[in-house]
Length: 397
Image 1 (tube, rainbow, N blue to C red):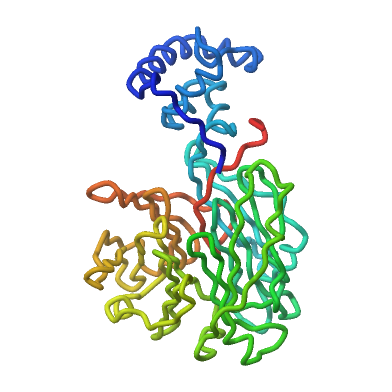
Image 2 (tube, rainbow, N blue to C red):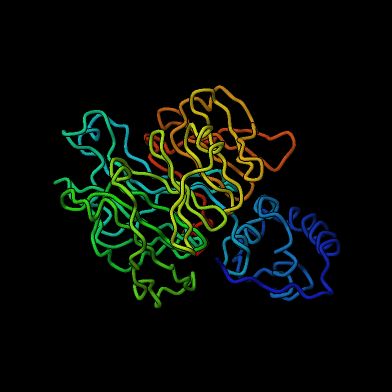
């Protein structure tokens, strides 16, 4: 995340709001003239040094700053402003000419400007990922990526010759729009279970260059070492994957599985079977009866504290009560039926609609929960969804 600024005690939210309101009135009246001038020459707040003005502006919602003037709009994309969360999608083209050989596209949706931006800096290794193959008619090959410490980490995919496409993790830093590499896996794999719990990345099962019992039962974890968002000199490649206690069987090698991390544990479900992995004790156990019985669709954890799941048949968003071992209804909506992907963060649960077109966003903090729709990137079908810190548009870099 971007570096934070400690707010001195003499700057209260109320006084900052009063200052901002007065400044906004003056700023709005001269907005047109300021846009013609060099924005770097204009003070952020009249009568205050910019470093003090920055402390005041940090207390204001970014949507408010965005709508006032260009200089304030620039502030919310600087490293000094607390980065707000954005949606990130993995997608493929829906164009007829691209269906036989679609390419993976990573895009970012800025909720303040309501615009999608394509990430064009993807490394060559990621372009080796194959999304379609004649051996799998009418099915997209999975690409497995997880969100950890404000980064997006690609862990597994399939190449055109049906081999593992990635020998090591590829790490995307959204704030600096840069890529780095993680430590190589002892065995590159695809069709595995992948998840993160408290900055520990776990890969379980899967298939290497060919199927083996050893790989299909293997479990590895990697303690993700956080780095400065704006300085990629210290790559995460110095870490290592550590071999952990093996799975009891090979059932998790049959598909790409999202391991949902919550309260120090990873929850994995395939078909009618599910297991729990305790990251700290390196122990495996079965899913609680109530959790397994009600798990009927894609799931994600909010800040690794609460698991949300969509019943894709009934179109109901539910959250798991770990004390009572029951799923509690949050919201029912026809548009949730057939949900394929889900992400949670910042008080929002985002669900990809059936067919990969359209994203339903549910504010689970408000009472009753609010729901709205975000259009998907034009001409793209969504394959995955993540919530990460915002990117910095080129015009504000």
